[in-house]
Image 1: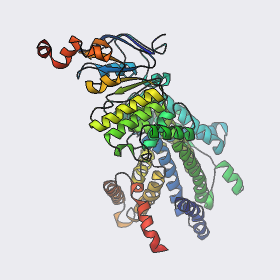
Image 2: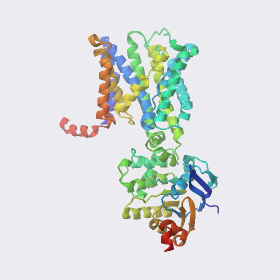
Image 3: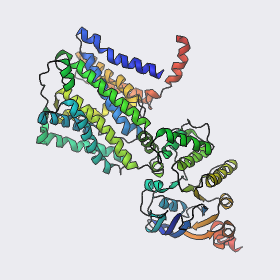
Image 4: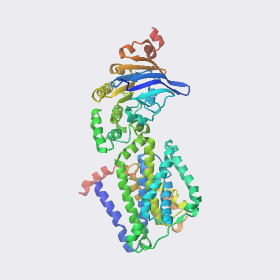
Length: 243
Length: 333
């Protein structure tokens, strides 16, 4: 079976800096893939290329049989890719419910239907009772949940979570991990999580892809990746690895 | 509560000119006409400026397009005003869509100044294009109208009932605009406009074509301005560049919207009801007599707007009215 997402030698540079160098990876339907790497490794750049906010200088990106290398974000969303943002981007002046309604309107033109779907997703995302709060007044953890609910409302096949757990307390992080597992199990959405916190990604992911300085340095089961020498060097530095 | 206010407001708007008309006064009907015209334009501007959050300082271009289109249809083809009105609004929206699509690549201040630039380009075109009368513009001859019914049907009121007739015509157009905007606010369009305003990238990420919806938003604004231009042209019985492209056709509706409450359906209405009569009162009191010609009225008018803006930058509608009204209710009962 063809993979749901296939990134083929994607390269993206900013001036002299190559943020992504010939990165190839695939994500199969039904997987949870962790994308990790130190700060500046090129994780968000790769996300931006997959979701159409940037276009690779070289290489190809194919989603669900469609070449999306040069496709605009709104088209890619319609094809079935949704994302959240490292720095939250809730619609601050709209209520939590209206935020999710905007997502649901992607699949229906009827407001009542979109609103019913949005209520379900707010409940699913454990935001019950916060429907009428302006999004700007929610806590960081709730804003991140709201972004997830809004993304889910577009009925994605693939959900890309860009550091959905960074900046959260340990308890909030545990709740967020639970939510990701439920999205995978109950809504049957394929998920790719970007994190630089290993402790979060390892138990969650079926497979882990590691980036460092724009290169893919490892791709495999979490247990094998943590023992990979290149990965240890990337995270701990060369001297520690030698010691 | 809101429903009672709506009914009372509608009744006042319908009834107040009648005793004045019977007395033989026409001044307040004309003030009412200007209030409604600017409220209507404010409702239109609120779509691009309030909901979609894109600062458009050039909607007067489409006011002029509407005014000229209807005048041309009337003068050259003999098309009546009410038939010309939807055509003129459609022409304004279509021209707006073509002009705005390239502008949607620009964001923030750059979008704003590009709308001004289009207005600056429109002025010499209006002043030199012979077909539309160049600097002299077009005159709209009044055809002899025998009865109130034919006047109303042709949007041509004359004589002592002129102010009253245009007042009710403006009230009808205003009510129609208000109803349409209430629908837009609750429709998919309203949700998408506000999403783009709050965060364009996030909006694109959930499948919203930001450029398309900005074009739609501004074209709705342009259609309302075009319709307003038709009404004004037939009231003024002429269209010429300095009048139809006057800056006030954007500044007054924008100020009304901001003062009343930007991004709220009733914001521009409240703002126009407050600002336009103040402007008229200022010009008839401070603008006449010993102080006439020194612009004192405009200075005082400007100060009032500055005070409101400083006191409540989010608009008068954002004040906690419901709390105040609820507090007072037991006292009344």
